[in-house]
Length: 386
Image 1 (tube, helix red, strand yellow):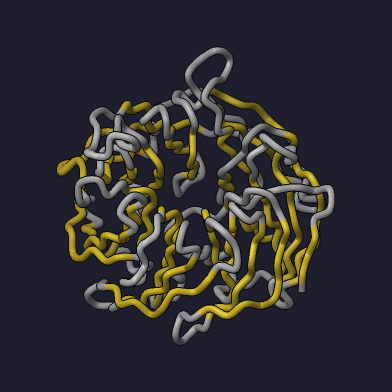
Image 2: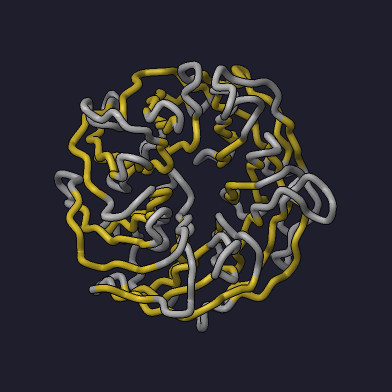
């Protein structure tokens, strides 16, 4: 089935990286699918679909909110509020992007803006909430910083409760001339916040205080990847014992053991996301562990594929299953639907989203034939509705 968006030009924004399917969402069959976009061209902001998970039918509900460059989205645990980074180099004359708060109408999918605040750094590129839904965490790519914002009782955002400016550089002079925070999320126990900094080749670990929203360096304060690797996103295994970091510049994945009590990461393995005979240019983008914990998926921009790995449940080590064409160009992000049965791949370069079926036993992908024709897809967020 081919779905055409007509005048509703948009791009996808994915579910939070590394987070397993919420148990409260598992029994649901109907979802709103909020779509974040870059708005330099035809797009106007955040779009929304209705998804029937049983049939896979997607119905466009149109423009949910008119806002600038809402590239990444996050939804609070109550599913009443949605938060978006506005990926901008300047905001109100400052070297900062913005963070916007919206109330969700779960009947229509429309979003009502509550307020917006400065992200405290240029080009915010990732957003997540802590496990209580009381704080929003943001990674500022060009600003090379991370920040935390309290969520007020009415869903609006307060001024930052924490701000950390990263410092340093890496060996890649073009991409690592300074810090570039690319991802931040709290751990399952809500005690630590993990941030991947592409410019520093470090995965930063902060102690997170859910009462005050503060960030303080952990001991140890970070884990390293190979020099020049460029860590981009992180995915945790559902058992909480392993973390997987996708390295954009080296097209690799570094696997860590994780001590949930100490917030400590220790390197286990690094594997390539590319076939051995590939000789072109490539940048990786997204990484996710399937909710069943058996498989890991990673996107290649250049080879234009999803690399699928099986996971050793006891040791956490990865073994390549295969590479699968995304049927488009430069797949930036992808997301597993809440049922765990489908993978939505957002091909930024070709402007389409291709839906694949996931084999629950092998992790292999087959196309469903569903294609959304959209410009510059970024990521998608599923929200269960009654």
